Length: 204
Length: 267
Image (cartoon, rainbow over all chains, first blue to last red; front, side):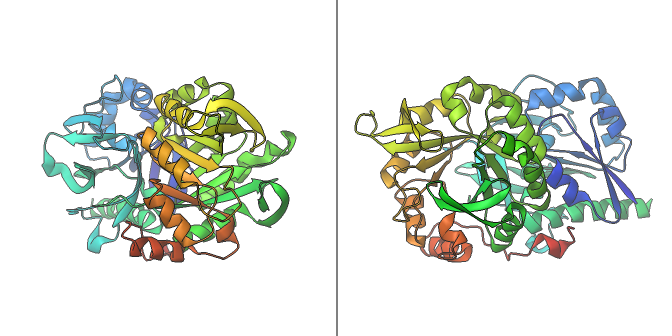
């Protein structure tokens, strides 16, 4: 049995995400205390709220969480949750987790927010075999700019702005889109992530 | 590398049932919100809007349970609108499971409610819902109407849309009161005027009768997305027939092989 913990920063919808994570092999817990949240098999940083509000919740336990991730705690960061894994954001003040080097800045496009279904390209992430998730749902105004583009395992483009759809370092994966809102292919993506984590545990 | 143009299904809800009726008269129940929303997801809808038109405040007490029940089963974005009065209501809708919340009359009464909701929850989940009516006396030619199309305001519809965006709204849901329910096409001039005045996506609403109407508002009208309701519920058009027509006209559409979420074991 795998324990998946969703960190709740206090803003927004966690129902679809809980439901997408829940399988007979996974117990899902929603946790508001970041220190308690890292006592888990897989940490989920959800994609609702604003950078400063979320990071201020994380602040007292930032070092502990970063240490846990560096020590290999599997983590899926969704939208804002992905952005929290970077150093800082133009959306507002606050220090990110810095698990990925780079900043978060405003999307450069004619229509912002980027709201709707967009395709992934140059996808190399192991969770995307045979293009299982071709089109995903996005709802965001800010995007991650990693210092090292080698962490990017899929890209998305709006107008002229090409930005990471997926970043990965070891078992920590950040996705700019909302897999829990990307219909059946998105749910399959989440299940594939959980399956990869559970294989890891078997391998230990 | 393409952002799809969206087909959004609107479910008008009264007393927790999806209802149908022309301009809010003669309402008839046509189904359960969650079941219909999931059915449309499986048919390929890009998003669902639940618009609560329940008349009395007491009868609205169960609506968060309805949102919760629907959100739990739906794996595409869900917008809730109807009677959202305050930041507290926005919070309740989001906690119940909505991804976006539409604010209409309450924003006209007190525009600050949009700015406050954006500060708390972010632009991407705050939708400014605007009902507009043709009016030669308004500067742009359209006036904002509130309370389900019953009350005129002093606001110009295009200027009001721009103000909502200045206050941080991440999307405009624009309904033509003149065209709503008529099935003779969207108000293309209104949609074009608002789309030209704002830098966020505009969802056009009111008037869909054929797939051609939907394609027209997405091309000539400049809308990013089309809201479709009665004509879909009556089976005159389908999500697939809309998307086929859009694709034929060169509009980018999302056309996965529409595997239902149940196929991947979601209870």
